[in-house]
Each structure stands twice: as structure tokens, then as C-alpha cells.
Image 1 (cartoon, rainbow, N blue to C red):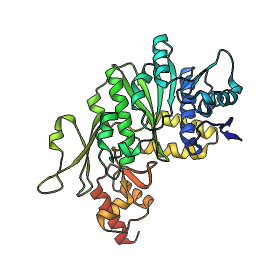
Image 2: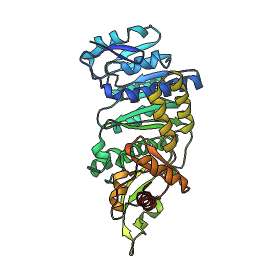
Image 3: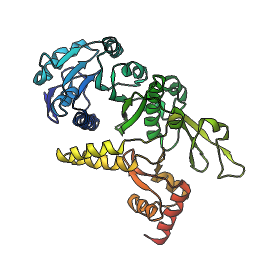
Image 4: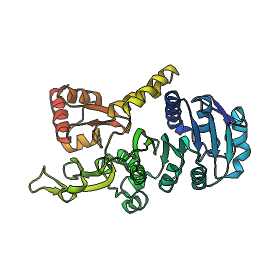
Length: 371
């Protein structure tokens, strides 16, 4: 049965296709289209293309100039070729069925670099980070998927350390932690190659984590952006920790100070590029993608806030109170001089530069006043 997504019409056949991941594909297409507008060129390598819906949309909606559709399963070749029929021009595409690592290394050998590399991996993409960077053009976009949420959310810290070089502990904002560990792993690999990165956007949706970063040929201070996150289980306080002061990972809200559980290293810089997201939002409005435009607005608001969030249930539990409506609490925090917003990471959470104690105090005052 034929499927429709965006401008793409395609058949699934025996290939993998997850309709719930359309949002991540929408964001990828918007980012690719903005990149094409800014640079005038867009060569796309889809390393795990499945039925080809992603790369077809990059062609039809983002205006990709050249397409490389690779999938490790040769049994899907007929379906893939059938789906890509609208763009099968002899000088514009290629279809292969190789391990993704082999494709990236061949690109490096041939000096065949791509503007956008999309890796929609199942499980962890950790082993693909380094080879994919070898195939990416300077200034290009790397779009990675991870579905191993239990590993980077603190359930299996030893596995997180093995895969990403980061020890993950459990706490109330683990969805953001997962994204930041993934970005941090990419940052470490780019730094090893004397390059730097800038996150374009980071998305948590449907138990799937996707990050898009832009890589530049300039070394940067990795220790400034890859740090540690401390969490106090006794009072819910978070703190960003520098490498040099890990021995001081104690929460001073107690007497004597109490030790904190520490996760990291992970990315503590901006979660999204606000300027790039604004360009994506403008294009989404032009295309009448209202829901995506609304999401991009939320992402812009949360981009530069501290690397954690507070679930409303956590605020209520810590304060032993009935929590006021989220939007009312956000406005009260803003009125008190803090930055606060809702977050795409959790519909029942807020991101703010206020401490948890301040959030509890302001929530209590709203509850007691009946506001």
C-alpha cells in the first residue's frame, strides 16, 4: 500500500518505516532547506535509508542536488529504487547496500564529502560518529539518531561509559541528559580532529533522540562545553561542574554539605542554534507547517537555559503541594525576574534559570493565594 509523507509518495515493502518519526524528518528537511538557501548546494548521504522516505523528501522538499541512498539490507533494493523513481537521474543519485562505516570510509578515501549526513540508527550510533565525520564537508550537517534511552538515562551507566565515554546517572531530567551525552560524544570526536561543532537542534520524541550538529574546521575549548552535571537526590538541586572541581561535587544546601551524583562529561552549551531555528521556523510558516513552527518556537525559548529541567510533579513532591498550572507558574517566575519556559522534552515540565527551591516557593505562593 502506498504511503504519503510531505511531498513523498512511497511503498514500505519489507523495509523499516516508523510513521511516528515524521516530526524528526520534518525538522531534517527544514534544516536541509535552510542550509541549501544559505550555501547554494546540498549533497545528501542517507546512511541507513530504509524505504527511502527521508532522502526522497530531501530531494523533493529541500532541493538536494545529489543523493546517496545506502541501506545494509539488499533485499529492499527493488522497493527503494521504486520509491526513488521521481529523482532517479543518472548524474544525481546512487543506491548502495553496504555497511555504513564502509560507505563513510570510502567517501574519505575518494574525498567525496557531503553537506548532510543522516544516520537513522537503531540503538546506539556511537561507533558511527568518527567515520561519519570523515565524510562530512566542513560546515556540513550531521544528523544522528539514538534509541538507547535506557543506557543514557542512568539505567546502565557502565554501558553509557563504554559507548559514549560518559557516565550516566538517573535523575528527573534524564531526557535532556541523553541528548547532551550524545552531543558531548560528537564534540569529543570533532575536537580530536581539531574541529568544533555547533548544535543545530536536539529533539526528544517518541522514545527517540535526534541531534543535528554543524561541524567547523576550527579547534575549540572542549572543556568549556563538555562538563559534568551534579544532582542532589535529597533536595533536587542541580549544578554544572567543571573538570577541575569534581572533588567539590557537594550540595551546599545542607549542613554538612551532601555529596551529589555526577553524570558526564556531557554537552552543557546551547541545546539549539536559535538563529538557525528562526530560519527554519520562517520556512515552516511559509510551508504552512504550523505545528512544526510552534515546536521550533518552544525550542528557541529553551535553547540557552541550564542543562536540566524541572517536572511539575517533582516541584509538587519537593514542596508537598498541589502544583499550579504550568503556564501560570512560568509567568510567575518571569514576573519575579527569572527566565522560564515550557520545554519540548516533557509536556509537564519547565526549564528555567531559577533554582528548584525558588520554583517551589513561587508555586506555594500561587497555591496559597488561590491564583
